Image 1 (tube, helix red, strand yellow):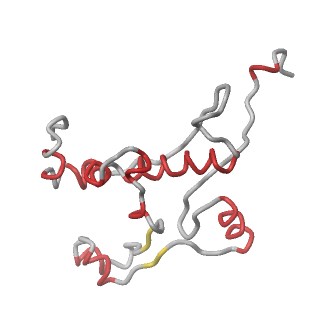
Image 2 (tube, one colour; image 1 turned 60 degrees about the vertical axis):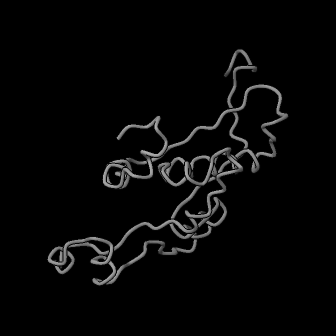
Image 3 (cartoon, one colour; image 1 turned 45 degrees about the vertical axis):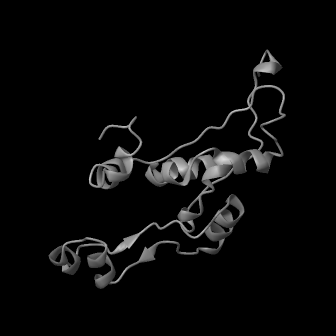
Length: 149
């Protein structure tokens, strides 16, 4: 039991992104109904995405992925970014900001007028966005002058 009730933590809102869902309600429904949300690709699709043709034909190569819908729909001005800044941001950062805001909305909290301390706790996986996208295509980033690749 917490001796000081003012130090407690309460989860009052949440948000998530998973393949085939845009919110926690859809996620739980898919879990309940056994919905498969992984996207399976053809050999041609993975080759077009840059996979070596020999690898794509290997019977042990899994041509599937966890694809999130509408990742291109980030509202950069809403979060104070220009479209150009948003274009070079890691997609996980863009999704994090959307989910953080949605968690506040789910909790019924307006961060602009909320009293007290409210925080967002998040988790994300490791990805290769910086190496695969930014380092291999540095031109958009060089235009910012404050980021050196």
